[in-house]
Length: 197
Image 1: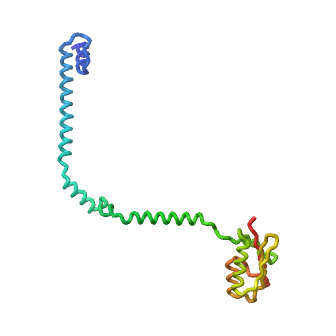
Image 2: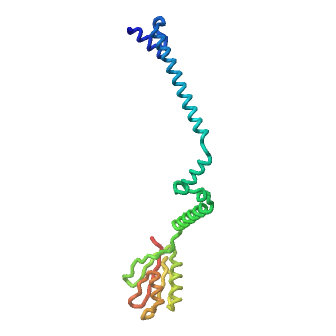
Image 3: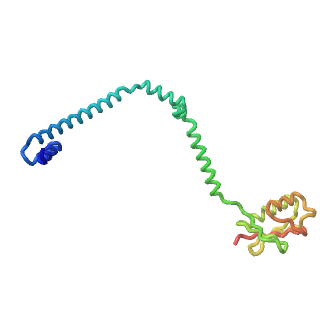
C-alpha cells in the first residue's frame, strides 16, 4: 500500500469520495464504515429495547412495599404525618400571632417617661411629654396616700408643693418611688415638670 491507497482508504472510511478512481482501498474503507454504522445502530436499538423492558417490568406492588418499608424504618416521612392537616394551620397562626405581637411591641407609643433633672436646691425637676398629665397623676397619687398637695402652673412649668408627714408613711414613700422622686430631707416636697427641650 502506498500513501495514495492510505488516503483513499481513509476517505472511504470517513464517507468522502476519493480523489482518484475508486479502487480496493476505497472500497475497503467504505465497507468498514458501513459495518461500523450497522453495529452502532444495533447497539442503540438493543439499549432502547433494554430500557423499555425495564420500564415495563416495574411492579407497582413491589414499589408500594418498598415505600412502606422505608417509611417504617424512618427513611421517609409517613403519609399520615404528611397529610395531617391540623398542625400546619396552627403553626401558621402561631407564627402570625408572634409576628403581630412583635410589631405591636415595636410600634407602641411609650408612655410618659419621667426624667429627673436634679434637686440641688430642694426642687425636683422632671421632664415629660405631657407635663399636665403627669402633674395630675402625681397629685392624685399623693392625695390618695393622704398628703395635702397643691398644684400650680407658672411659665409653662407644672408644679406641685406638699408638706409630707414625718416620718414618711410607706404609702407616700411608694408614691414617690413609683415616680422616681427622692424623698425630701426637710419634709417639703417641691416638684417642677417641664416638656423635654
